[in-house]
Image 1 (cartoon, rainbow, N blue to C red):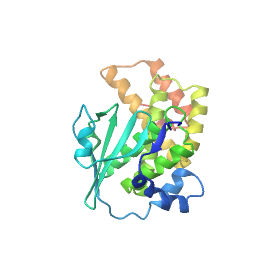
Image 2 (cartoon, rainbow, N blue to C red):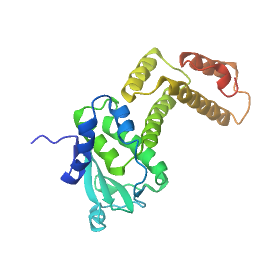
Image 3 (tube, rainbow, N blue to C red):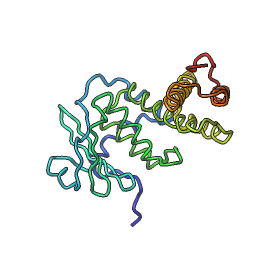
Length: 238
């Protein structure tokens, strides 16, 4: 039998698909934002704290396997008061202590799941869409968390593009494709580009210990700002 790379692991996980399947007709991200926009309250959400050499402990503590993504398994323990998430990989359990809780955890978790599900192509196919939507339904994410997680995904990718000080035509084309996949509103794009360039500037300053970085390096920032359609006065130091 063909072993799916990304799949739900139980009927319990599948129950979070019904509402989405009935109302989803267009793009995944915008549909999720509108679908979950009315969420007003939910159980507190956080991740498993600590690192384990075996996932067997999770079942003893009431966690149930929810879905599989490559060699990673997401486990869920949920009741009316709390929703706890654990991630195991090759039977070892991740330490999610630094992921925060509630809003902080939800946005980080959604972004991380997107990266895990899509790997390097950033495209969500039908099987991946099913699992991703079930994850969002399970944690009862609200529209702001979904929106912010989407922006975190794009900002992370832009950071990787600008980290070498050069933006190529191929990278620009890839960024345009990813923006389309993420359904990012054009009004948000410049803000995310500005943040990435300012982070690059701050890193450059730290690397040179606040000394003069030289005209060549400042020109790199100016050229990247031009290619990313960012106004120069919005970039630190320019």
